[in-house]
Length: 117
Image: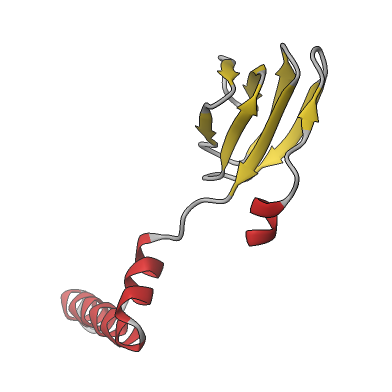
């Protein structure tokens, strides 16, 4: 994932279009310029300018049509909350999460008359 962050940001000349298959949760960062952003499955386009960011709501095709010479980059989402918690707690994090999940499964099993799930 770090390689994607370090990849060169593509430049788009005015009047040209860049198409990207964008994963959900990633952020499109407009470093400079201005462009229209069209997302597959959405009826309204967004006008973006240098310095603005847009988080992709769902995976799909994204078209970026530059109104002026533009530079954009795609950044991965931050680590999930459970990953951050586990990292903060170190080795104990995994044991704590397993204990919590085990407790949840046992509670479900009791409620369903002995069948988990």
